[in-house]
Image 1 (cartoon, rainbow, N blue to C red):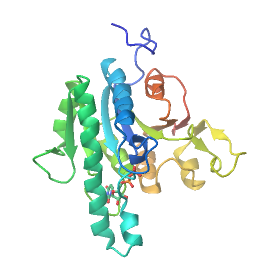
Image 2 (tube, rainbow, N blue to C red):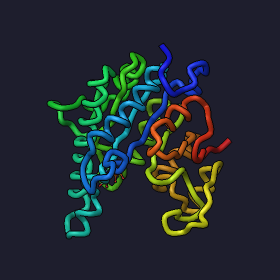
Image 3 (cartoon, rainbow, N blue to C red):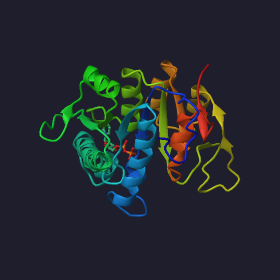
Length: 248
Ligand code: UDP
């Protein structure tokens, strides 16, 4: 049965994608934590593309709960604070998993930090098998290493599982701009850029470590506005949405 709101006639442009959800994208209008309504909307968007036969892996951030640098600002050791940040991603992975399962989508959470009672450990081949079986795999705890970000986890996992593209969900912006659109109303949206361009110009795609990993592996990045949940389905349909970062 066709799923409402997408071009059911068109075959998906990707077989396997990695969706990076920042903590902020699960926060909705709250100041902190996860907004259940927002999580449901995100889950619905994931379900929609999963039902089209696209294999979906997700990396979740934790900026809505805790970032290592917050701890550092209050005098904590960076590594300890980063481990707290990684644990916080698990607090985002679980409500997303729950929302998906309640919609009938089969999921697995794989964590880069061992927390056996709540999530599988990250095992690459196992993750790929889950994806082949149509399960949505949520990668939690970033890379498992301090001094990294969940952007880097997204790039790393995407390369490891042979995802064809990274979908970088942003909030409040349509993609990548030549300047900060929140402070400069003249900032213009860039629809096509190369990885090198983004790196050299310091454009806000993802952090530099993550971006160079994508560049080295010629992994395309679609940066889009998650405020419109249909955007994931549009990108999967091959529509041009937001900014495409690619190197031919
Ligand atoms: N983090 C880490 N290593 C990783 C991924 C994340 O140490 O591989 C920590 C880091 O402290 C980071 C926090 O987890 O600030 C939350 O991740 P991030 O800031 O990337 O979340 P997002 O901005 O996507 O919400």
